[in-house]
Image (cartoon, rainbow, N blue to C red; front, side, top):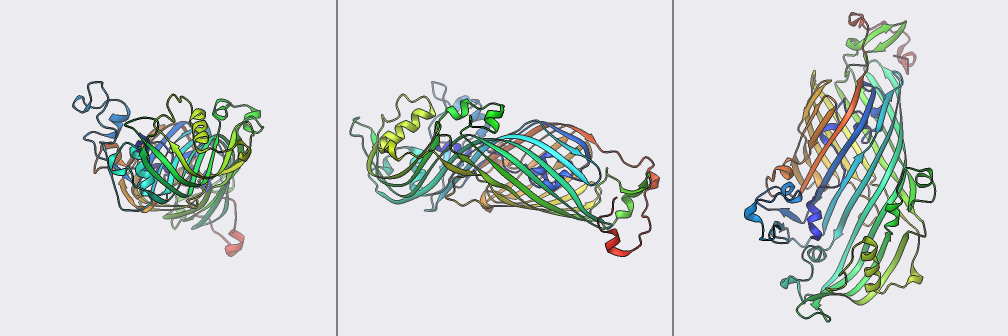
Length: 507
């Protein structure tokens, strides 16, 4: 069921209910690397976290039971066939036909062992690991999207000549090792600024992509099988590239795979960002300890906070000639029949059948191409109404071209009210996801060392015929910073010499 992927949760995206928290730890630095410094933690260890996500603008889930039950094989008995399978290949999906291009984003992210360490009041570091996978298509003609959904066996699509087709599809998988460094730029009483930089090593373990610049297709009678239909590719100008499954099979934590030539490809990425805080009540958090003026590290001190960052700058160069295949495609009148993919069991066999069906000559095969990271601009604001009660504002703007060979993070805008304390937190993100077109309401909870949430309750609970779904969860070891030995010592010491003397002073 090709398009079922368009609403199956799989790709990591936002963790909207957690990332703006003052207790987000390493989860927050993926969005804003500047959050690595002036943390509420001495040490924050992420044991494991996962984020699953999907959205599309083509189909809605209209089944009388949640998508989760379908995926876990718990479809109610009245909706099953005699063989135990759920009825209908597309009966649970409702198309949105409007002659507009279609898009899909889904994927999964696993955040492995990671640690944030506060060095002192001015510096912090973090070391993180994760694996990311993503499937997307964008700017895809509606007729091509319908073909992906129904295949060739639907009567209303047969014999129709579809010209001017276009689209871009990507499948990506890579591992990431990263180091983040943050520093306080200045702490001048009510004004506070910090910055952070993340350097990432990216190792690709799979990629496949196809770009159709100009295509024409038509469903015809299968010349080799009576009673079946085939796809006549009347014209296809574009690109087809992929890595062999050997790239995934060789994935292992070894120097040769991480930095050598054993992987299909590798590259580097960067995140950079700043955070400004306005602290009108800084006197409440100021004290002297061992002759030094300091701020209470256990408290959130701002009335409002504004953060901005550019994340996932960079890419992966796939260039291992044993595993990498790239074809410039310009073909006419090629048949993909009902028997083309019979007996295939592996991705390599699928790719080989596609190459043979399109008649792509081996002499035209290239062995190198670049896949970009999901580059995005993140802007966040957070306002403290009163102790423990906040409202956050989050904006993510994708900077990836629709035709790029790259993973993508759809643009999003959210308002996130939350109540937080050291050991517990609850938030309810209200967002416009999927390039500002999909209204959602979510819920996130943090209790001690664990957290869980969704940015799309409708997709989990099957409310309102959703066209997306999302879930995330994690387990951590939080070790908090210590406050003043004598809480009564907090005061604001006299300052002399004006702004420039105070600029960058130690806290």
